[in-house]
Amino acid sequence: MSGVSRRLPNVIRACRGLVRAMPVKRALWKDVQHGLDPKFSPLSLPVRGVKHRAIQFKKAPLDYPPVTGSDHWRRKLRTTFRCFDTNGDGYVSKEDFVISAKRCAQYLGLNDERTQCVLNQRTRIWGIIPKGADASKISEDDYVNGGLTVFNQHSFRQEFLPMVITEDFNAMDIDGDGIISHEEHKAFFYSLNIPVEMSKKIFDVMDIDKDGLITIDEFAHAMTEFLLTEDQDNAYSGFFGPLAD
Image (cartoon, rainbow, N blue to C red):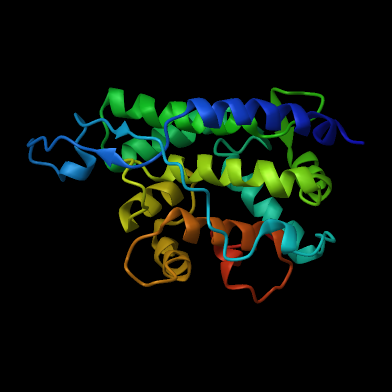
């Protein structure tokens, strides 16, 4: 069993506690007038309430067939890794999540307090990512090969993946209102060095009911399709932008 696989049960237990302690979604905002869009006012902070409803998956993660590690699937994992590797040093580390948080704040024009909120959310994601022997960084090969082992585990699909989806959704939902807007999605792409002009295409695919917003259920379906399918024609292959070679 790989180091990543051995660490997964411990990570899941830690995440259970994190999810119970972490207030999730549905925000109330003060309307602060400073000549800015109130949704992204740098002086507004979300007041999050607890969201009790579980994710309603369009197709349950356990219903997907085992991942075989096809070339197309590996391209998707390499793409994800290279997006997370925001400093381009060939490894994913906590520093990369700090950089992505600062880029997100830069794109939206957030002040220091709001930036810290984004930073806390991004570094929380780094904390729950399963890691190998070196917990300080992950190489591309370890990320891809570890994913092939971990993604087929029952515990990953049933317990860990919904936690990851929730954390990733919260990190993208900057204003904490329980939905992802076009601007928030563009900020996500910008933070990971994905061309912002490519945001609209995948956003429109994710927006199943075509209301111009992404719910956590729509986000969960998109992310699950991206991670657990190997069809080259799958519409969600662009979840992290153009696929790596």
